[in-house]
Image (tube, rainbow, N blue to C red; front, side, top):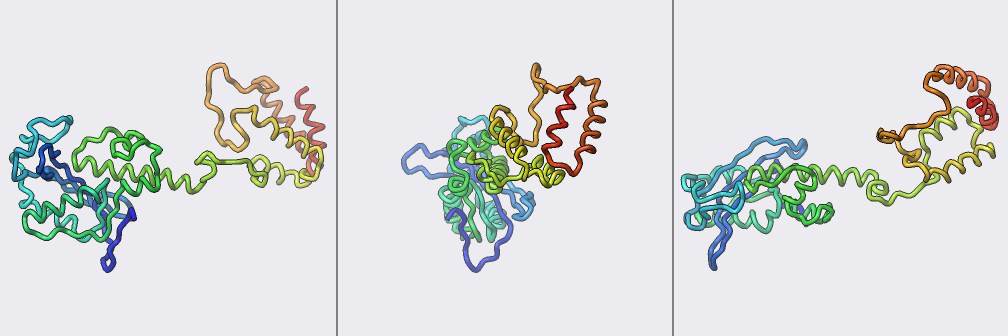
Length: 298
């Protein structure tokens, strides 16, 4: 399961957290926590309630590179004066224990590193009441439409900028990525056939124009000329870039203007003529309206 819950515990706030570590490059070398960052989030409003971030000095400074391959990467100089994990363990424990843990790929990496770090100082590790691993959730629900499931790729897909690979920045980006993915999935579940590209014409669908016409002329559906006229419109609909179901006008472009059967200056006269015509054919079959409508173009 992508979301794990532990029975007997009360679900509280969600804490998004991320660890930055060294990259072991020697046999037997361990991961060392170099930075911890977290935000506490209200699960109902998804607003940040609390944040905490600290660099951490590992016991073995030689495990940290003197130069980082990343622009914002953590170097040995950056952590030499940072507190040790034991010095910040109480704060980290208070943030994590008894809350829902959330993050990207935390089940395979961050959760393991937290347990190792607390075990190294001889203290019990914090325990979550649930785990939300966004890597597993998004792989299952969102799919690979953005490419691979790395946080940097997902952030680029939604135009959220570049991942900085720093704990606090990454957890905030993680939350924004989840919000964007959830919004897309919500919209798709609302109109699955339309937004997933599987929409087919439904003869039972009533458009605004059809509804208005039927309310004005209740006998129009029984008129054979009306049926012939609407069938002609449906058959020609594919010739127009914007179908009757679209509520947006086409974007303005040079050299593409709507052709009208009257000049702009005569708009007022045309309005009066349309009004007179509607009064004349009120409560009459649609065929009468179609017959008299030709007089508007004369």
